[in-house]
Length: 365
Ligand code: F6P
Image (cartoon, rainbow, N blue to C red):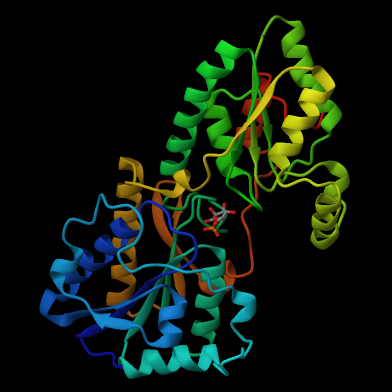
């Protein structure tokens, strides 16, 4: 691994895509050109995340590949989920993934590897760092659940999209006097539901960190109706669960849902509300729309700041870190500190307290 002024930098994007991946790539590359001189920088694009690193799907990128991508959604490199728990398993075709990734890194004579991704991506980034590769992480995810950073890029764009969806649902909920249950992405952490719920004026917000009682959700809907409000908006994180389910192991919880014929938590919530109150209920799932399209102005700025910091780390040959936002400042955390943690919504977080203070129900009291 050379430490001359010239740098060969491998870049990959891994896990679910989100707005701001290209803006971050552009930020790193442009800042590297500035810091090291364009003639001293070679960027190796790795296709489809760690899969491309395992399979040696890499190519030397041209500076022009990074023109005009600030506003582009998705990722110019492609992405794929390659679960961390399967990284150390040698599968059917006898591929030792970790060995292969190291070989690709060496084959391309990389000075460092940049990994743009969420929690799973950071676990593998740390693994490769422990294996001796020079790795720098960049925190992306609409879930905003990466430990050590106040926010991840992609999150605020998804909040804006989710908020617009709820705004539009509001008018139709009102017209039809219906209960509209809006399912928002977020399996483990409820940040996106919490923010879109508050910004969109949801009446009830259900998140994985605050197990709910179906009776209390129904009570909240009924009490709005009793006070003359003919409709309600319920923002439900896809990973929300009731108190009984929260006490169960994941496997048992899923089994229970299959036995009850339930597909999603939002479908169950809508059905139970309709059964108990008689009010017509509907489910809306914005789904992957939340992850698509151009990044917001905020995310473009954040992505550029993160990218510039990663370039600085490269110029300092400071590896084994992931960049982060702390208050107003860009900083970095050790990959080993971030790798096995998740940033959950604290039930006494300012956002939860604020929502409760204006009468939002979390279905728990
Ligand atoms: O990127 C994280 C996430 O958005 C989660 O909130 C969601 O559960 C998951 O991706 C779904 O992604 P996919 O359908 O692409 O696997």
